[in-house]
Every structure is written in C-alpha cells, then in structure tokens.
Image 1 (cartoon, one colour):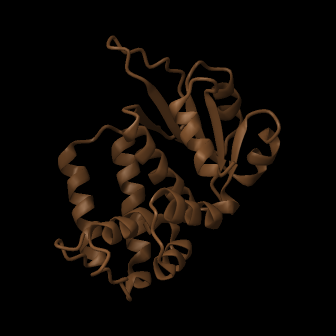
Image 2 (cartoon, helix red, strand yellow):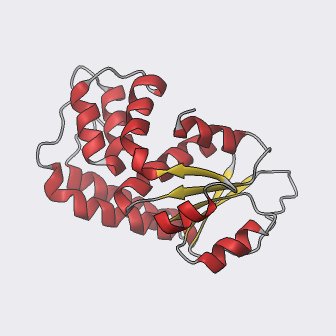
Length: 207
C-alpha cells in the first residue's frame, strides 16, 4: 500500500491512533504535513500542532475528532506519547523510525518521490512530467504547484527562478506551522501567506 493511502486510512479510521513518520529533512516533512492537512480538512478532523508531546485527551463537547501533529527527536517524548490516549502523528528522525518500525505504523520519508508521483498521477490525476519533476525536486512546494496547475492547466508556467526563493519559502512554512501550533491570529497567518505569494511571484489569476 502506498504511504499516502496509509496516511489517509489512519486519519479516516479509528483502528490505530499512532503514526510515526521519518521526516528525513524539513523539505520532505512539509510535503507530508501538507498532505495531512488536506486529508484532515476533508474529513473535518481538527489538527493540533505541538513541539513536544503533551498529554491531552482533546475532549470535545460536540464530539469533534482531533489528531495531534508533532515534531520530536526526543525518545522520551515518543515513549510518553505511545502510552497516551492521544491520536497523533509523530515526525521524527531515522534513528527513532528504525526503533519503532516493527511496533507501530510508520512512514519512510525516503520514499517521498514515489509518494509525490502517486499524489500527482493517481490522486490528482495530473499527467505532466514537468510538474512531476519540479515537485520531486522541491517537495514542500508540491501542493502550491499542483494547485496552480489544477486552476489553469493550459496556462501553467513553472517559476523558473523558484530555487532562488526556496529558502525563504521554507522559512515561511516553518513560521506558519509555529503560528498554527500557538493558535495565533488569522491576521498573522494571512501575512505570511502573502509573503509566500510574493516570493513565488504568483499571478493571482493563475493561482
């Protein structure tokens, strides 16, 4: 089964409540974060962002579902989380990935190229070699690029200077993650979204 299908099943079903992802690096990690955000939104599941594992049963008077999303390389945090009632997705390093490979559901981030190909060709039904190659070389831009393409496939133009700006965009993605984790105002989040659009030089009619 493809990794993205594993993630979809984990989010949708209640059979398992722990998923560990080998993040490899920030660029690859944020591809999976974006996919998780897309799927939890489709399933109307609340996603909470954390730096460290915090015991939280996420009780909701209206019966809403929650999934915690956390980045941590601290094995003590992982052990605490595995013993908790929280349903969560853990991004960690390869060492911890190997340690828990046989005990919980895991995703190997080193397979990201295969997962991007699956997303583009199977889920989004896009048949375009240029966008596939671009997304596999800049994985954390996959969702913004495919969104551009789906809005205006005939007028799609890859940003030729995007690699000059990727460090800025990745920094913005990290800041957005922190803002969401800290439940900051929509105004602050909107500001950073505008910054990303400026760096990528999107024409709003295309985007």
